[in-house]
Length: 276
Image (cartoon, rainbow, N blue to C red; front, side, top):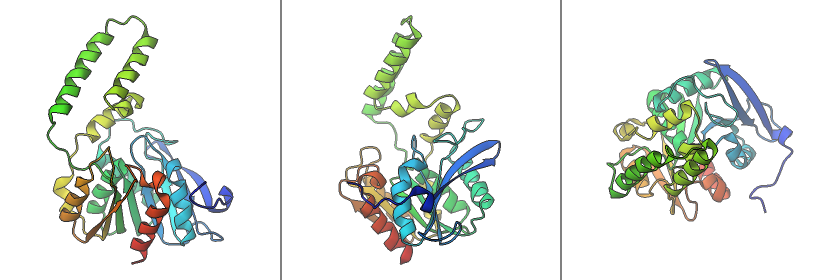
């Protein structure tokens, strides 16, 4: 059973393509039922690593029913958007979002960022306070801790594994073994990334945003799943302590993806926050 009633997609959800910085960008826009494109207060959604706007359709539909114009972009290198020509970091993505919102005519809007998209959202909100009315952060991995014993062992394993692959004669077998190895050490995202996106991932996972948390000046809602295995829920309390005018909501059973596991609850929390 789906969390929300289905509507004909062409009636509330439109798909668009836009050329920016020699990058073709794909995005989806949901408008209030019976309304026209561009109507309603705007909410921009930035998805997480390895995802796309596709994973946010349920929330787009739910929030459009509440009267919002909900835009979900495929970040460069994900979904149907082309990758950047060089290895971008969080700041580069933030700069790109600034160009994107101006290109589609957004002047002030609500901003929601999930995981990697949350990192971008934090950076954007700090640099462009005049554009962001309110900020919603879903489990952003913005705190980088020194590697522990587990991380050091995984690093040693990875280096040894790469040496073993050198003696495997078949390229096809190498790829299969590499994929199995990354899955074993829970780094399949790195294996799935191709070309410049592997370099992007290496840059992003090294970036620590802790020093700019206190510079977020807009009202902020921090949302986390109580059993998040990707980013520890303890980070939620660090963010709410460091970000002024912020509040935290922990969703039972939401994991790292509340928009997929508990979309109704996430929609309720976001709607309440936006209308407060």
